[in-house]
Structure formats: structure tokens, C-alpha cells
Image 1 (cartoon, rainbow, N blue to C red):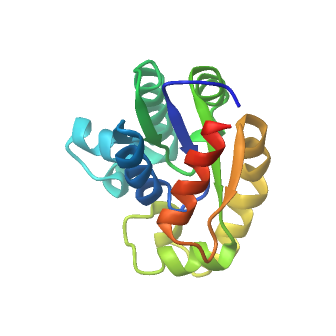
Image 2 (image 1 turned 90 degrees about the horizontal axis):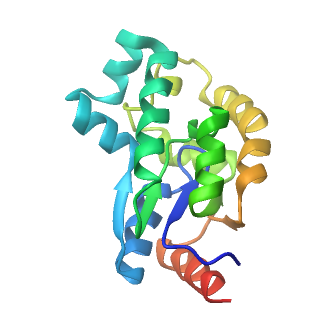
Image 3 (image 1 turned 45 degrees about the horizontal axis):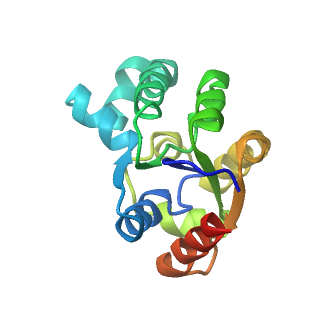
Length: 172
């Protein structure tokens, strides 16, 4: 395993990147940063509003800029948005500047964890969230795997067990 001061969490929405990231940062004594929260803080608007006004392309430009900046820091655990890997430059930066952990989640888990969340622009306008999640997984899974230093399944697992698995893998 590559030694690094940074850990970057990638994976689909509902995989637990933010929740696991907070726990991981606590255990490792690192700063936790969530790209979506950082984008909202900087823009003064929520992700849904940015999607409505600027479209997905506008949001992805903001996301790529934030990822470029944050991945240059040291000693962070970074939770990325599910689509962060769609940008090839972001993939390259994540892969080069830290240990990338792909939090893998089943479609069922994603549906369960996102069904009440209204701040999911790619799902909020869909009559069939399963179809959207399946299409996103088909498109993005190869990109997650391309840059992953480790793949950790999260389906039917506690946050603590996932974080502990990552910590143990980092120690190897």
C-alpha cells in the first residue's frame, strides 16, 4: 500500500463516503473535507440550486476546481461526490495525490440511503431512481476501479467496520 498523508474516498451516492470519511478522519487524526459541502460553502448555494442554474457541466467545473485545490493539501480525508471521477483530470489528481478508497455499494443500498434525500439532483427529477443508479454505476464503476488503491464493500456494514477495514489496510 502506498504511504500518503491523504485519503480520498470515491464511490456512488449512498455508499457512505461522508459518514465513513468523518469516522476515518477521527480515528486517524486527520481533517475531514467533503467536496459537496465545500462547493456549497464557497458558492453560498446548495448543490441542487447549482444544478438548476448552471447544469451538471457547471457543477462539474466547480467540483474539478475544488478537487484540484483540496488534493494539494496534506493530512486530509476527502469525501468526493459520486460523479467526481467523470472528469479525467480529477481522476488523475486523486490517483496521484493520495490513497484512493473506492467505497462499493449495491444498488439496493444506494436506493435505501438516497430515497428520502432531496439534495440528489440526478435522482430528484427521475421517475425511476433505480434505472438512474444502474446507469450511473455502469458508467462510473470502471472509473472508480481505475484509480482505486483499495476497494471496500459497504453494503450491510457499519460505518465503524468499514473505517476499521480501511485503517487496517493502510497499516499493511
